[in-house]
Length: 191
Image 1 (cartoon, rainbow, N blue to C red):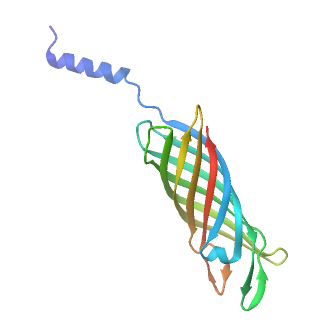
Image 2 (image 1 turned 90 degrees about the vertical axis):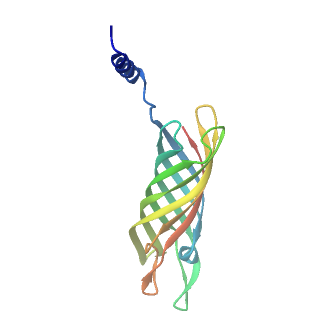
Image 3 (image 1 turned 135 degrees about the vertical axis):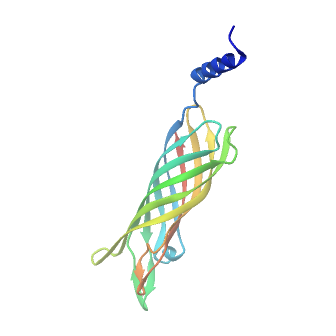
């Protein structure tokens, strides 16, 4: 007759062998929207637009997921005074690749608010004059924001706003660098 310890050991091994681990959920998303320059960047660039491609991995029943984003932001030019001379910027762009943590504030239900934040690499191109001055910057930065997902059958709509900050990554004016800070508001879909 098997001992109680042997039965417990066999039952534990059988349960462990038949239990399936929670599979990671992988989703892909696309989005786009409005981008507002902020801080120093707002002095030299007008409002613009953004496009987003994203992939998110999470584990069911856990409120935290990992998300990687590739985002393109384009800004219109703006007239400004530079050293008491009227000047103008042409269109500029910031392309970023970021890795973010996403915390689902309410993980269950059809409406899921979340907060998001992370770090990334930002490639900026500023055109002060289409013929003479182009400034390219490559810097690390951070982002933080919030959003809401709306569950659908097989997909989710989302809307989010984030602040992106690239320290020392703006236009080289007045002998120094400016911060590139901007706020994209993005609407999209996860598959």
